[in-house]
Image 1 (cartoon, rainbow, N blue to C red):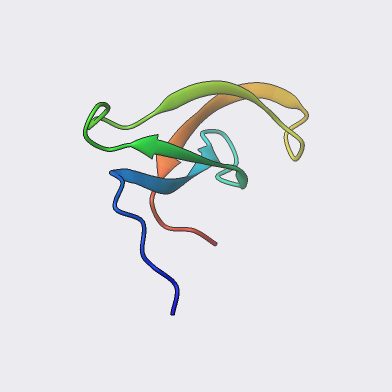
Image 2 (image 1 turned 90 degrees about the vertical axis):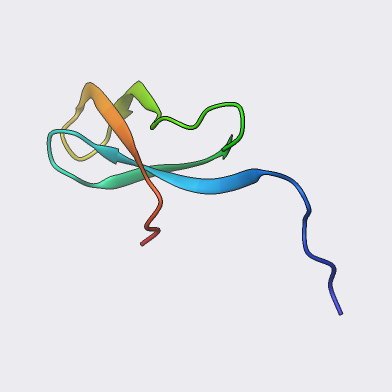
Length: 59
């Protein structure tokens, strides 16, 4: 049996603010950063750099 992680890190998806596509996956420490993440990242669907916001729902 595999042991579960005992760390406060969770897997989150980054969604494009313009088209809503899920482009990136990342981890965050929910103890140190309780608020939602926001990054300016490149969206291959829009072909521009847009703001990507955190979503815990993975597609």
